[in-house]
Amino acid sequence: MPTETQKPKERLVVVGNGMASLRFLERLTERAPGRFDVTVVGAEPVAAYNRVLLSSLLGGEVDEAACGFRPLPWYEEHGLRLITGAPVTEIDRANRLAVVGSAHVLPYDRLVLAVGSLPIRLPLPGIDLPGVLTFRDFSDVAAIRKAAVEHAKAVVIGGGLLGLEAAVGLARLGVDTTLVHVMDRVMERQLDHAAARLVRTAMEARGVKMVLSANTAAIEGDGRVERLRMKDGSVIPADLVVMSVGIRASTALAQSCGLACGRGITVDDRMTTSDPDVFALGECAEHRGMVYGLVEPAYEQADVLARHLLGEAATYPGTSLATSLKVSGLPVFSAGIVDTPEGAEAVVMHDAAAGLYRKLIIADGCLAGAVFVGDISEQARCKALIRDRTPLDPNDRDDLMFGPAPKTLAA
Ligand SMILES: Cc1cc2nc3c(=O)[nH]c(=O)nc-3n(C[C@H](O)[C@H](O)[C@H](O)COP(=O)(O)OP(=O)(O)OC[C@H]3O[C@@H](n4cnc5c(N)ncnc54)[C@H](O)[C@@H]3O)c2cc1C
Image 1 (cartoon, rainbow, N blue to C red):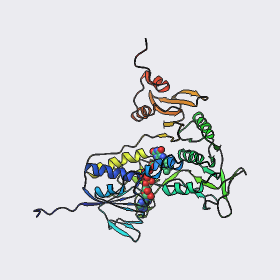
Image 2 (cartoon, rainbow, N blue to C red):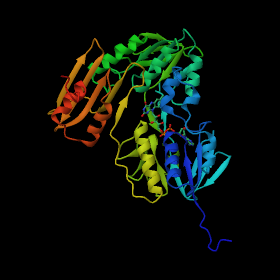
Image 3 (tube, rainbow, N blue to C red):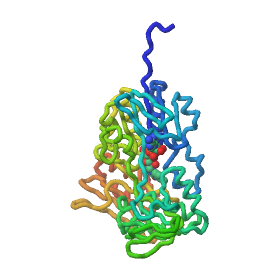
Image 4 (cartoon, protein in one colour):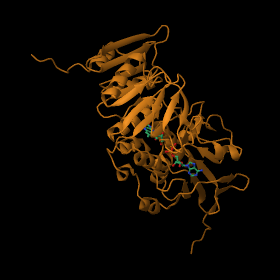
């Protein structure tokens, strides 16, 4: 018989079972297995999977199984109770309860919100017509693939990273695909005009019709989508519309229980919300005014939160962002600033015929931005130089532009 009364384990409820949630659970269980009594609630019907691979899934390059991370037995083996297919509908902070519809009431001592974001649906006339879809999860990919029968006409609205990837995926399925984008260049936050032109040409070579500076006025159809009407009066036929115009952090649950929110759920450097026992991480969190839409910050936050909950000193300083496009045969990388500010220097190498572009922006002796199309082999180095603000060595710019010099010269 134990001589001392054992302290009951702290109850930890994790809301959301996406990429940030799983990374957090992995870090927690690696460092201190069994330390908390953990319940994870995921709205999707399956356990966390690799959302980043959805573009490849859409284009048929991988199957659903390849997107899986941890099988259900992994959760059991690590003592994690996983509830899938049901969202947390209410948080009662006064009584420390997370409510899952009429199915479960989960008492907690600490609560983690990892609820991600929602795709934005533009408030256009016709937005609710059948055939107007978004691109965020397994069920979206299944719906797009179902609608994307051969010879169907698809329009992707949005020329950001996901819009481009969705359009290439659809074209690969043999669908007549048009991408419309409101700006005069694609990925305008990551690419300058010259780089964006190369990407546009490469998209066209993959069979995607590109319509830029295009404003959608309405989505029209009799009972389901048939066409897009543009503000200039032109019409684009469409059996299927994929809306990929950005994401919005999921804050509804946090707001409804009175947590401080801006564009995301406000957190400090320890991922703590305005309630000291409630934490947020991943795309739903707003840290120092930033809401991230990439997986790397979510993973860094997950690591910090796991360590913090285990009593270690860990703080999250923010993430310096880098983006790469996942279209096979079209390497594109961008990090830091894109346009050259006053007083900074731009070093550019551009070979349009070969589809090659490299631009370095150097400010105060450090790399402040890099845009590469066609060859992104120096991406890791650029990312580190920008993040660490390491002063550039005189050889660095040549290496980054033309590749590292050979170690020894041939006789
Ligand atoms: C097609 C596509 C391609 C991408 N490509 C890249 C890429 O190349 N590089 C990159 O860095 N990032 C990419 N991303 C973004 C990346 O997937 C996200 O940054 C990452 O998934 C964020 O993790 P998260 O856990 O915050 O959110 P998510 O992974 O979205 O997980 C949140 C989960 O919470 C669930 N949830 C929401 N509300 C509730 C509730 N009330 N109760 C229970 N569960 C709830 C959601 O259903 C979801 O499963 C891509 C995203 C998409 C859609």
